[in-house]
Length: 363
Image (cartoon, rainbow, N blue to C red; front, side, top):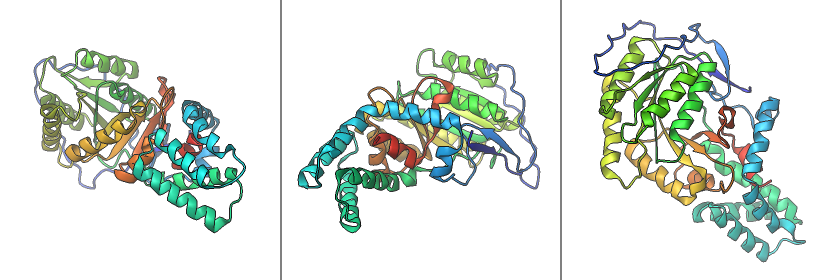
């Protein structure tokens, strides 16, 4: 694959990890093998990239696997792409074209602010470039959308902290636990030792679902039947430090932003994790369903206000997904998009690239 997992040098002064806290009903699967410890080593990974972002051209041509995945993304966004492409079927560039384009972008869940921004950019580029054919307008729209989405490009770096504590939130049905399982698989394949925290004690069978992923990936899981989510999170982070794990993934309960008591529970989990490891969580990710349209932007706002998000995972960009909501997010709440998913398979979760996405959406 085109991307890499980078492990950094540990601190110059070694810190003795704290002893593992005692906890009732603490369960763990067979430990996964520890990752490599050579300073500065690069390990191939499908999801995790070092600090530098590959150029779009390099990403597109780097591997056949990426090209195959891009075909899936285009297929998933085909409905939206077809609707927008019909706008450029005419013979001339006129106000009717711009009006149709505005309607198509709004229908694609791009949102009012992003739609007006894109229309303004397209008009400017048409005037400056002297475009005379509607097909050229589509190319200019692709460039404008790429530039709008570019701030969302950011790699997830693992290894700067040991363990790197990643807290994952999202509403029920967004694919949160499945995304954690996929991310765990790719991190493990890259040589990182992962520990899971089953802090979703609110939803029935959530602990069991995460346990299935732990078994599949042969990684440890910290869980307590009927336990307090914050206590489970504390135990997991403490255990991750004591056992020298590279990554601790904390699965939190799915909830709507309007469930204020559950949102407060999320804040509590974050505070308790900080007590277990100063500076943690190092990443706070929100999983959003690409099919939910502008509601996804509402979720990003609410969770970002509550938790100060560091990244997004956008799932289910297939079937009925419109995809334009990423433009709305980029314009109104530009939280980086680490990964996007177009299916249920492990390989269907990949890193986000602005140009690839713009081309897929407008193909």
